[in-house]
Image 1: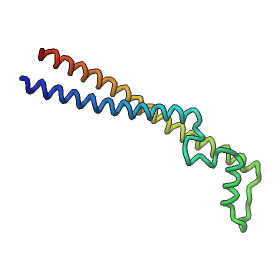
Image 2 (image 1 turned 45 degrees about the vertical axis):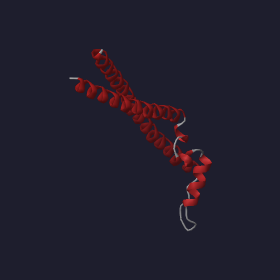
Image 3 (image 1 turned 60 degrees about the horizontal axis):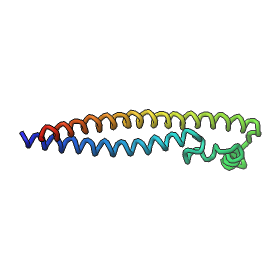
Image 4 (image 1 turned 30 degrees about the horizontal axis):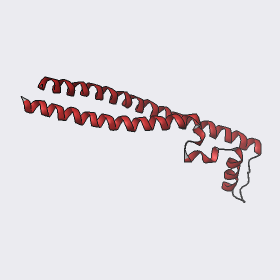
Length: 129
């Protein structure tokens, strides 16, 4: 019977270790996601060209060939920029919200696992005395 209690304690310790590691990883990801949510346009490398209209215009003009028949006006570029920024913002916010949801659930689950296995470990240790 003592061997089973030792195995149960080892199991509880290992689950607690995994729960603590999961807790720490999720905590850092949650903090990162909340910081990214404060300024989503600057939260990823892919959104550098949307930081300002001038940067977007410069990038667009580089992609236009000299022999191209149509060159968009500033008003058309502004409309394209606003549409691209809105689309990029929605994509980034979706990723951030998904990250917050998944990491939040894992965060809570790690707390529940840690608590229940800590109680199990304590009960097993108290029953030995």
